[in-house]
Length: 159
Image 1 (cartoon, rainbow, N blue to C red):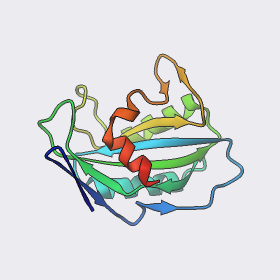
Image 2: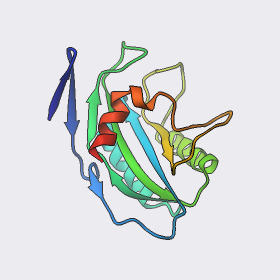
Image 3: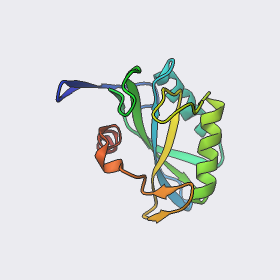
Image 4: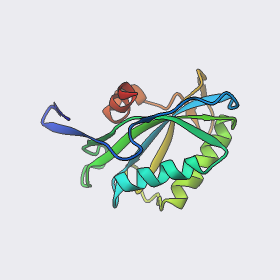
């Protein structure tokens, strides 16, 4: 499916694990919405590998994923299109420990932080954590400006 948005074409993609929906597990305390993005290499394949990585972890349970949205970059525009998706995970980790888990996953999947809005292999953001609202040194929940980004809004609507 394609969406035309002011001369931008947004395309939806499906893979083996995007979209999926699974039964939620009662043993986890929290629910988090994780934004997933990337534009370096075979991003869709990397998203499937990320899903398997989460599947093999006892720290999170993926209950739902959106289709993958292909959309133009913002901020630094001289780079390839991004692929973005949304994932709902259940966890018993608090928000700080979940962030640490996600940053470790980014590192495993080759994330390099060279400059703001730079091309990246994988970007993982906590968009929502339960119904929490807070601002700390290294984490803001809900994620800042989530409601202004089609790369977040459209996958969120597909859940």
